[in-house]
Length: 192
Image (cartoon, rainbow, N blue to C red):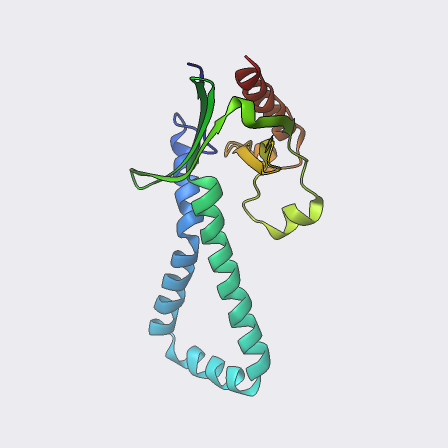
């Protein structure tokens, strides 16, 4: 049985782990800093309160956008950054598992078992557009698309690595090379 295990946060890199948790906890740090600022600077807060009351619509739009951005950042960190993906072939069945790894807890969030005879096509996933990269602060890029005979398409195996700026960009050459390598390994695993 051959197994392929990947994670955006390398196991041997302490800096990458600290950076990943910092990204995950950043919205909470910002809220905590704001609360501390409010506690020690009551005059500034009173002035801000009058400005907020004068510009209610703008303030409400800003608060909604900030909250939506915070939720999006947490969602992406949970689903694309602090994860581990494992795929293998055993007894003519393709197995894929995606685990969330956070604070030492490993939880299964996605599990696929596809008989190899049901797989009609394995192809490399498309490169995301610039707009996608712009709207997703923790962009991900799935390396493999598996299509079954029923027409279901599964996009698996994130090719982003939290090492350098280039390896975090879903459209970079480094990410394209890693995506191609992962795709070839999965295709060879399924075709054997």
